[in-house]
Every structure is written in structure tokens, then in C-alpha cells.
Image (tube, rainbow, N blue to C red; front, top):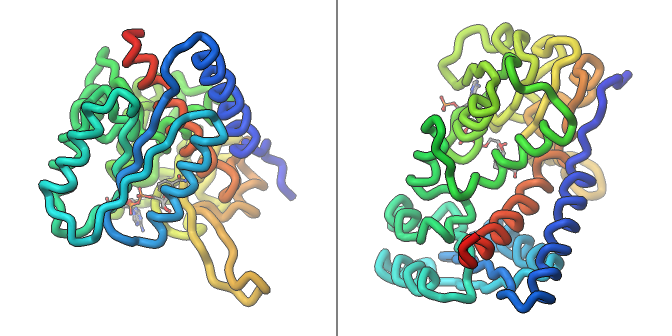
Length: 293
Ligand code: NAP
């Protein structure tokens, strides 16, 4: 039987999106520029097209202007960087989002480097990540998914200061920035990866466990300390014989883990909805930065 408090990412994200929409409306009323987000898509990756469409729709709902730029799969490095530079100079564009992954022949790091740091709403510019890793330095923007994880922890009143936090995964886009953010909030952090020994025992020591491992339902009930808070970043599509033909699940075996955890996010319906909400929040912040605030 599930005894854990469910941290409902859908509700928390909707509240935040409503707050953002109100702030955008207030800007319009005050005669300030409408925040604008430009999405750059290179090639025709169907998953990337879906993500970009979802982000543009969410912008429209919040009153944020969205500009889509699609380049062909054979676009050159100069084409992509040239577009980024054009967007850097456009006053209607406050945030630039380059949908990853880029085609193999494009140097991703050089493209991310080309984004004006004040428009880096994905938070992947090396300067923003570098500031995140340094004590007392403030990045202008936090990467959306890690920021969403922290937002859920704070909204659910999870004690972070002094807590033992374990992050399962060390990727640039999720695990590592989550770990840095938890350290900044005074948790004692262990980062696990594919070479970690006794993974289950390490996880069992966690007061706060963040799973970003990319393995469906890997975190089991006996990996979790009773009463711990578990945040599941994983998203997996599993084929089945239902009418739909598949179901979605996370990195955590939700049904069994929710019998021991104190609080848990479902997946879907946990971190996923937060990612877009944080991107909108970053775009609003970018417009404020452009105003000199
Ligand atoms: P990733 O780049 O594949 O990184 C996975 C990490 O897990 C790596 O650090 C890897 O270790 C570690 N790992 C893999 N297998 C392991 C094992 N058997 N034991 C221990 N560690 C292992 O994945 P990601 O991009 O961070 O994404 C993680 C998950 O989050 C995925 O399910 C992804 O779909 C999901 N995600 C969700 C959102 C959202 O908005 N909700 C956003 C981004 C990602 P090594 O470093 O040693 O290889």
C-alpha cells in the first residue's frame, strides 16, 4: 500500500505557469516588451519536433512570444552559428533554445558557446554551468530539468540543509547540475554512475534520492530508506499489449517504492511538467535582465 506523499509535478507546474502568465500580462499592461523565446531546430528528428512544438504551445499559453527556426539536416556549422548570432542581436528574442541533439557534423559546444549568455535560457552555456560549480557565483539561468527537481523539493518542504542526498546519474544535463544545486543548498551529496559499487547500499543511505539514470524502474523498494524523498527524473516508453500499445514509466519502481518512501514524484506527472515551466520562467527572467533588472 502506498503511504508516501505524492509530489504532484502537474499541479506544481501548472501553478507556476499561471504565475508566469500573470507576470507576463502585467508586463504587457505596463508597456514593457513581451518576453520572446526562439527555438532552433536542425534537421527532422521527430522527438525533437514534438518537444519544440510542446514548448512553443506552452509559450503561447503563458503569453510569451515564440519564434520557430528550422534549418535543414545538412545545414553547416556557419549556418547554425549565424542564426544564433542573428537571434543574439534581435531585441524581440530574450531566450534562445537550441534543441539537442544536433546532427553529428555540427559542433554542439561551439553552437552553445555562441549563444549570448543573457539569452541562455537552457542554462547550458559553459559560463552559466561554470558559475553553478563555483561557490558564491550566481549563474544567470539554471538548466530547466535540474531547476525543476529543486523546485519540487522546495515546494514539498523537503529538508535539504544537512540532508544526505544521492544523485543517481552524472550527465551534463541532469545529474551533475542537480548535484551542484543540492550542494549549494547545503546537502551532503553523493553522485553515482555506472562504475559505482554497491549502488543499492549507497542509495539506501539517502534522505533525498534523485534518480536520473535512464534505466526503467531500476530503483527498487529495498534501495530506499524508509521516509526518504524520491525524485524520479527518468522517462521511458515501454511497449505493452494495451490498446495504446505502450505505457510510460520512470527510473523508479513507483508502486513498490511508494510503500517505503516518505514522499515521491510519479513519472509521468512529476519532473517532466516542471521542465517546460522552468524554461518559461527562464524566458521571463531573460526579459527582465534585458530591461536591466
Ligand atoms: P544519460 O546521459 O544517459 O546519463 C545516465 C547516467 O546514469 C550516467 O551518468 C550513467 O553513468 C548512469 N548510469 C547508467 N546506467 C547505470 C547503471 N546501471 N548503474 C549506475 N549508473 C548508471 O541520461 P540523462 O540525459 O541524464 O537522463 C536520465 C533520465 O532522465 C532518462 O530517463 C531521461 O529520459 C530522463 N530525462 C527526463 C527529463 C525530463 O524533463 N523529465 C529531461 C532530461 C532527461 P556513466 O556516467 O558512468 O555513463
